Image 1 (spheres, one colour):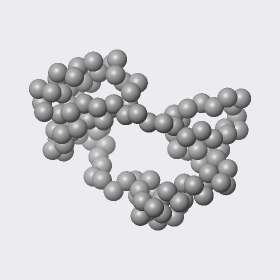
Image 2 (cartoon, helix red, strand yellow; image 1 turned 120 degrees about the vertical axis):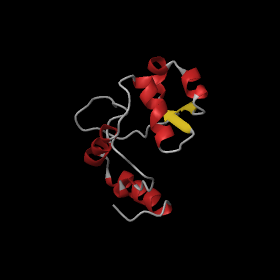
Image 3 (spheres, rainbow, N blue to C red; image 1 turned 90 degrees about the horizontal axis):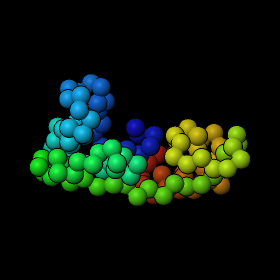
Image 4 (cartoon, rainbow, N blue to C red; image 1 turned 45 degrees about the vertical axis):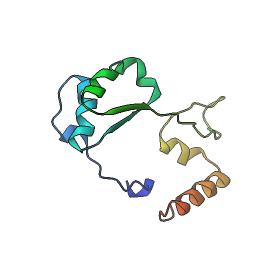
Amino acid sequence: MEFFCIKKQTALSSELSFPDDLVQALVDIPKYFSGVLYDSPLGAKDCINAGSCFARNHIELSYQKFIHPIYIQINYDSFLSHLSFLDYLFNADQNQYAEFDSWMEKEGCSEV
């Protein structure tokens, strides 16, 4: 996680014990870490549809408004958004790498 400049405590959900009910698990994860916010991808809004479950547990539910950067992807005629960071690493050009390095440096991260 250090490579991505993530300095927060992390854990694999598979190593924690949460209920099989997806929405309840999404409520329990921030509670487990004494959190008060669950920031969900916007695409999950229809699946979650249970804001009251979060409110009852004093967890704020918000949805990300991520604006994906656009870069040339070698194997596609048009841009496919929201792929992994590996897609960016294999497709971005040197100018985009420089922009990323600049952002990492500004955030106090070591160079990639």
